[in-house]
Image (cartoon, rainbow, N blue to C red; front, top):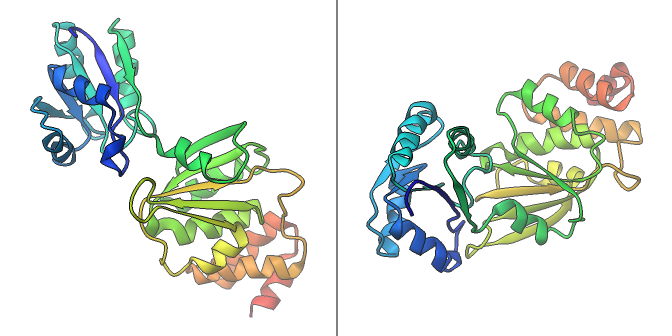
Length: 273
């Protein structure tokens, strides 16, 4: 196994999903590059794996990446793992893979569970064509720009999201996309796995209290004839109300929703107050 990088998928919840090949690979490589060694050591202990680890994450990816590549070029083998799932998907591991190819280092995939594919498969939404959009920015302006770029996206859209950010994300999605089918997939492969089949309008109204917990994947209907944009002033006012509840002023909410729906800011504002 000398001189190669192995990209190894690890369980996203249920440890029974850890493949025999992945276990063997982690045992046989010279060292493991882990996103968080404190998390990975629990997995290694569970499967009696004693391979040494190094820490590799977004804050040290440049320097540590060069160190890892140097060791591989020196004849060692390395497996990269993330805290859960397949490395290099919304993960700094992609930088290490790129650097390995630049240096002529072979890269091998050892597939494992992937939240985006699993969520899509059980979402009930079209699976033939889809786009994975990862995590939205915590910055309001950047998040809105990201969503605005997808207004005409016809493919099913997949997002990762943290539960504490879900209320603002749902409000923004409803404001930008209008009412579309939505599947909130939570706690994949874990005891409390659940698929919440709803719509953006319903979810923006119902799940603003932080009641949805756990690891979340949002699967959203793409643009099309069935994707309903706000059709009435009342629809636009409801979206504006949701924005006010998120903490912005009535004036700002009316302006924001007016720019997205075509209704007049003054009309929306009057209904709000």
